[in-house]
Amino acid sequence: MATQSSPPLRILVIGAHPDDCEIKAGGVAALYRQRGHVVRFVSVTNGDAGHHEISGPPLAARRAQETLASGAVCGVEYEVLANGDGQLVPSIPVRWELISMIRRFQPDLILTHRPNDYHPDHRATSQLVCDAAYMVTVPAVVPNVPFLKTNPVIAYLSDDFQCPYPFRPTVVVDVTPVFPEIVDMQAAHISQFYEWLPYNQGILDQVPADPVQRKAWLATQAKERLKKVADRFRAELIATYGPERGAKVEYAEAFEGCEYGSPLTAENAKKLFPFFD
Ligand SMILES: [Zn+2]
Image 1 (cartoon, rainbow, N blue to C red):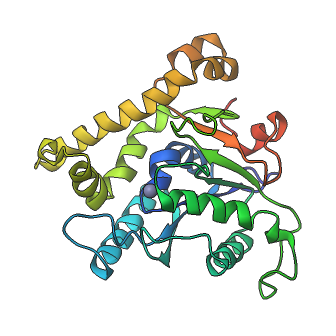
Image 2 (image 1 turned 135 degrees about the horizontal axis):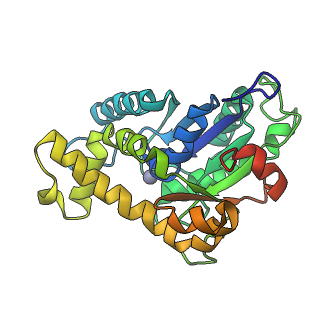
């Protein structure tokens, strides 16, 4: 838990869509919440396009309900911005929206997508966060919201893209102990994990109809994804947790310092990712 001498950390995870934060940072979110820290997930778009049967306001309303259910799993605050899904661009109005949002939340750490990614909304979100960095400290920019004295630390969520360079982890976290919470968060996004994503991948027929069985099916997918991260960054896990635990970590999440925030260093990483005692 956070102690009286150290106020709770304020962690802001900024994804493009309802479900991105859970996929890449659901584990650390659960770990932060276990220790009494404040976590907010933000979806920069309202998710109103990513489905094969519904779209527009009815889909946005459904996605909003799903974010509430996901946030309730661990007490994560969830904010969905009104920008249209699939049409996000790094515009000045959205940059100002993010500057205001970041200033009001006053994060110690921001997690977001890397700038190179298959999805245009992910790329735009990354650029918007990078464009808001530093500008959050400039008083004359969005002058009606008090500026921050310090540029927050920013780190990227992990991915598999290779160009222009592969993801380079600064911090790798064992999320094995909170795997059930990760699955619970993802399972709240019914329209994503049980409908749209399997439809888009051509595996909709594999999703069990029974609620218990389909959650087990989802857990298998989450295991594969998080095990891949642990195996890919096994050397970093061993360096962090020592040879015994590091070799045994089943599921991991990884984060890479972004140069446009305050630097993520080995020293402040211990404070910002307080999971390694
Ligand atoms: Zn997404």
